[in-house]
Image (cartoon, rainbow, N blue to C red):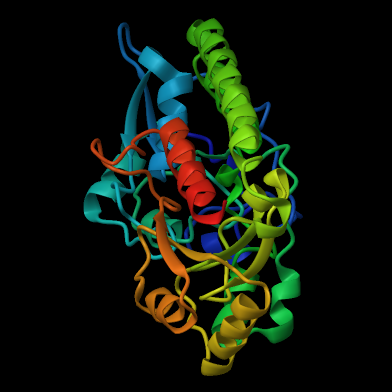
Amino acid sequence: MSAKRVVILLALVSGLLAGCGVKAQPELSQSQPPAVSSELAPVKLAAGAKLKVVATTNIVGDLLKNVGGDGIDLTVMLPIGADPHSFQPAPRDVAAVSNADVVFINGLGLERFLTSLIENSNTQVTLVSLAEGIEPLDMTGHDDHAGESESADVHDHGGVDPHIWLSPVNVGVMAGNAARALAQLDPANAPMYQANAAAYQQQLTELDRWIKEQVGQIPPAQRKLVTDHDTFGYFAERYGFELVGTVIPSFSTNAEPSAQELADLQQAVEKNSVKAVFVGTTVNPVLSSRLADDTGIKLVRLYTGSLGDAASGAATYLDYMRYNTSAIVEALK
């Protein structure tokens, strides 16, 4: 591992790597997803050995299971139920990254926890962002009425919404990026990675079609979303929902709303005849429960930053999206 080249392909904030002993590529735009490098050198694997791959979130991990298949030895950092916005790496995570041939990330500023992890790693780390080719949603407009914590959050995410996985179309792009990077690192298995990605992309296309059919059951005037934080921008854009507001006015669960912001949201809920507030399973529901009680709307739990466990009905990304779609449709139709 000590001979690894550092390939930083991140749409993270520049401060992520500050003081880590790792140099980011110069002039890398924080608001644009980076390309998967054509310079990834093949990894020299011993006979019978597999590529050691680390995925940051369990959603990225599920994607890599589908694309990497039997060609990779996969470790997923975030356990089921962990919130990527507040995750704190443990020593085992440092060890996993230190021993990996490559670390795949969502990108666009989601994995801010990598700062301390890289600082504590004794080796150079090859990081690959999966965000290439995805047009990120701008979040700088949220600064207009943001408090200090929200302004910092917007800055730290590079001005874009990192929740790209809430659209299966985006995940299809991510799968292609994963296959391309794996093929560069492990050319002997390149045909398998490419075939796996194509098969998974077909499943994602079918999922996208199914979601459109399900959403069609909701009258257009009722396609209004209130969520715990700004998570569903890509979902709303893809499937024709209006984002009325969020309990936490931020793309991160680490921010806190003011009393005025909560009062404004309550007024927006009543004015727009919103039927439900949707809360991620990794998020404390106290404030959302208060909003639901005060306005008489339903509180519906969804899977957002993490997949569910084996009994949840949301243990894979495909099931996760079906679960969330069904819950949204049932609440709003």
